[in-house]
Length: 245
Image 1 (cartoon, rainbow, N blue to C red):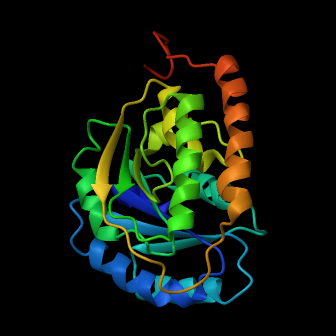
Image 2 (image 1 turned 30 degrees about the vertical axis):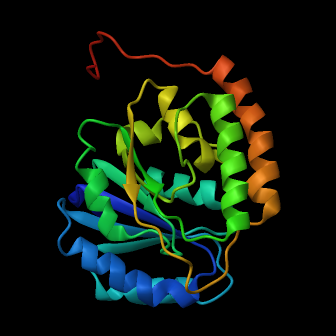
């Protein structure tokens, strides 16, 4: 039996070479699960880490019955790790947070308030604690993405999201899709809500992003999204005699 099915909410945490953040992750995530408004578990996805991240998450899971891990055989990138987590989670809701803890697990409570009404509830990083150059890159990338996708989302890169698991499983995944989650949900006529959340500077580990994957890759992916949008198949089941609606 998939143990995540015993919970209402699964927090997916993609991890790649974050050994210096594992103690903080254990502390902050366990604090939230202890008083979350829903019965909550944590699912670490080790994305082929080359450091001691996997060993540390195994130790964390041994100390907390609501913590689980899934190790990918090789590094596939953030989108692959997110997809693995969504595919593995069997709770009603699935969430996502980055291992760098630049967002606060406690803010999941703000998002969960709106989860019954919206298939995707996502954060907007308020008072963002990144460098001016990093914020400029994100502003350019977000502006271009909104122009291309018309998703109306202010901060698609915010690493704090809550999704209906059943809806998330139907999202077409591809490399770089984590930047297009709102637009991909909207292809399925899903409702999207944005909530301001706290943001902090990175205090440990090293960022996996650079000028290439903040600007150039998203530009290319926008054209891939536009191509897919014209060809996307969206259907809803009607009457049948074997699985219901």
